[in-house]
Image (cartoon, rainbow, N blue to C red):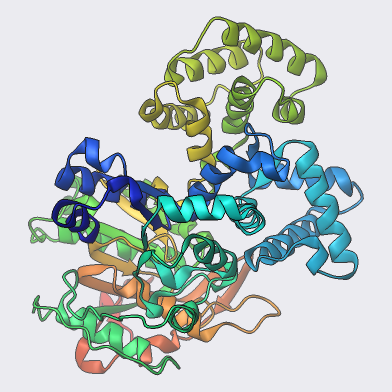
Length: 574
């Protein structure tokens, strides 16, 4: 709205506005809202990008000053592993992944190989050389190299500062050091800056992000005007009260009172199941009951009562968990129930081998001089045959991307290079549907696919229950939210050999709670198998922070394995 008002009421040139978001979905939604307010022609002049997409734009335009080809390819995680493994063939996969994680951490702090030490500096330098040799950049390079480009070439820095007089950054609490450095390069004496964020929702510390950049910005660019938005339009006041009771135990000193005018008195539900399988069944049963049953079987089997809550659809429910490994029992329960669902934040589409085979061919079409992907995924004979076929496609002229993907899929299947399974076909069709938005803009499509994050795969139009991680739920909202696994080893999560970051884990739980609009249901399993081990876990300590008046404990009912005695018994929970 602020951007629309600047353009409509203050005659700001839309081409002088740069809006930075943290997800592609957020960028698309912002573009859609602005188009509705300003019209497509005006809104189309506004640059709305994620940090990484903006960095890619800079590098496509001027990366040759750093020795980059304008047709560089973006290395997915599997490509990074291939590149580093080729440099160190004796290293195991765990060692390779540890090195890549350390390199990513260094890049998020804007550190080059020369600014690191010891054997790690040599590994980092070798990796960078191999990327450059193959005309590749990794995800972190898109921001780091953009920073280097603007820091080393003051004429470019001046040009971009002159171009963008109005800068807006969303989710500022999740900025890391290299992203802050990029903002510093874009902010000049005449730049008007608007930063939007909530320090209580900073949940990406493992990527180097920290809310301390709020204070850093105030020091660097004083005087700064700070506005606190205190009204919440999403959740009921009761859900807000419970959420605030959790987050106010944080060490953060400043706290803004948040209020809502939605005064539904429905309390939070707490439920304990004996196992993760029983927890998943409870989730399914509760959804069926709230929706009114999904089949005659539900009513006939007494799985649900006939008093379901009217007005809810499957899309109104979200199941949130700390670890993707928790989704297995949930998926099994939903498959048995027949309830439609979608999982978000699991394996990225680009990490599936069948999708990567199609993308390898598309990268070659984008730049026939670039053989890395063909040589990585196919034998020498098949790579050469495909290169000849793809070269003929290039010579025949540009085609719509969906048609190209169909042709590539057909050729790969004809050569028995692509599995013919339904799941493989479904993934490639998902890629095809995404390509429709790009018509013949192959480079833009490839970049968009590689830069997608977990939240970008959430489809709000699908009438399906959503299963997703707490991290993936950031920025979303649902009438009914379940947070499963409210146990001491999961929330806060304890990684083996590491002390948990209690502050960030608390903020993550707070983010999950505040996704709920009308109902919030917190569940736990008394016993859970995770990573091959069965664990007995007490409740999450975060549950104790919520006063009793705001929560109700739903009693579990278990059938007795013997005939005599009462049909059901109730167990004390929490």
